[in-house]
Length: 100
Image 1 (cartoon, rainbow, N blue to C red):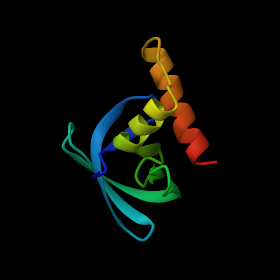
Image 2 (image 1 turned 30 degrees about the horizontal axis):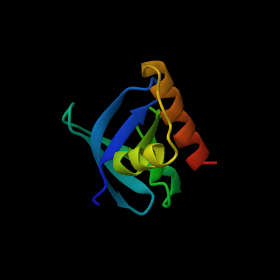
Image 3 (image 1 turned 60 degrees about the horizontal axis):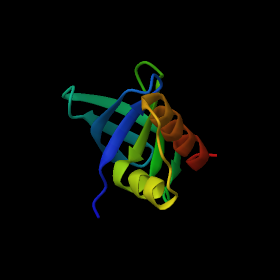
Image 4 (image 1 turned 90 degrees about the horizontal axis):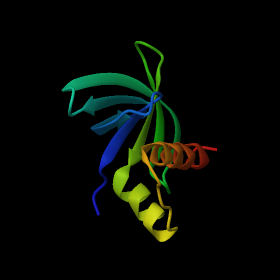
């Protein structure tokens, strides 16, 4: 299955995105905003398909997650969300655990 990348920002907003990298230097394109962000790769987990990027202009941290892989993980482990806050908490836990 093809990766469906989702950019997750520090304030837990997320957008569909596309990533192209040449070594550690990457360009992140956010579809909804029609915006290109030049980033630097900080950490990566190829198994869970999670990448932590740093915006080269502002220094902000952006996490990139393969939505299909994360959704499959949640279904296999029967992770259930009671509300939006629970979803945000589980997504953040998945990202942080993947990048330890």
